[in-house]
Image (tube, rainbow, N blue to C red; front, side, top):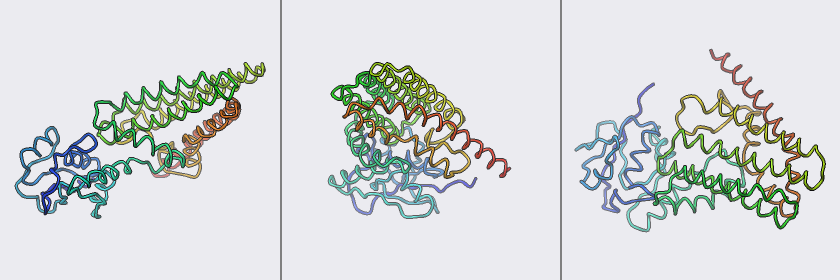
Length: 338
């Protein structure tokens, strides 16, 4: 593989905000230096760095130099960029960063970094509603010692705490289950945002987040089935719960084995497809997104959220079958390329 270019952080043409100024938990220049390696740069150097800047970059692989290496990609150290910008820069394109010349520019730089945390593959409601709230929370947490894994555990606790509210068919009770389930989903977005924003991603954190979500879903589906059984007395409602919970676990384990267990850089899980995206894998990805929580919230306002487990008892096994077909297609594509 051809090594990427060198990124040279150079003094800006006009003095502005010091590059060691904290922004969302990290100094300006340190954020750029940490993101450069993930964006494809083979190295980072800082030109004529003052002592304060060198201290801010301590512990990174940045090399202080007197002059930029010929052929390096130059970027003023007061330009705030996220990884998407740096990837464009490494590919020879102009970045879309924010030049921070004064204190007013810091707020725009914050917005730019936070917008860069939104994933392209998210569902509509998650992207346009959940992220609005979770990014606001993340903005206030970025400068604290709260870790992504702590946020994951908080989100799991909220989701599990909401599950017992579905044991009742009363709207005044169920609505709290729907609200806590949605709140779980919103807070669960903060762990990944903090991890990407502060470069604290870890395999342990990705696994904790993945299985934490599935524990919450299993708890909610189980309580829905029990609530429906309490209300109707029909044994088949319990079997609906068994189907939803069991196939939630089986599907999660299958996705974990296929997409998360091997050595991998970047996010542990982004898609069920490994060898190439197909129409079927797109459908599977869409089904696995969290916009269904809004349907549960609406149903809970009328005291009928427990009936969601009936459809889940059918849809989740079908989802598992789709995963098997996607895996078969991935193997077929891999064999054709070998």
